[in-house]
Image (cartoon, rainbow, N blue to C red; front, side):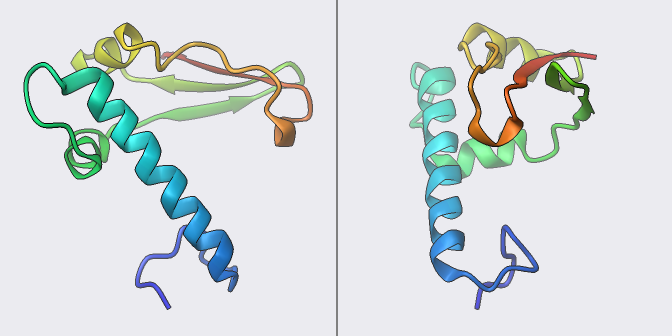
Length: 102
C-alpha cells in the first residue's frame, strides 16, 4: 500500500494508480508549458513549485470556484492558459469549474 494515498479511505489500487498518473501528467504539462524555456521541465519540479499554493473553494448551483492568491505563480498559470473555465465536468452536475484570484 502507498504511504500517501490520494483517496485515503479507498482501497482501490487501480483508482490510486489512475489518479497518480493523472496528477503526474498534469504536473508535467504545467512544467512543460511554463518552464520549458528556462529549465528542463519535470513533474517533480512543478510539484515543488506549486505544492504550497493555497486556494479557497466556493460551490454554488452554477459553478465551483477555485480562488487562488495573486502572485507570480497565479500569473504564470494564467499566462499558460491553465486558469480558463472548464465546462462539462461530469461529476460537477453541470457546474462550471472556474479558477480565479481571490
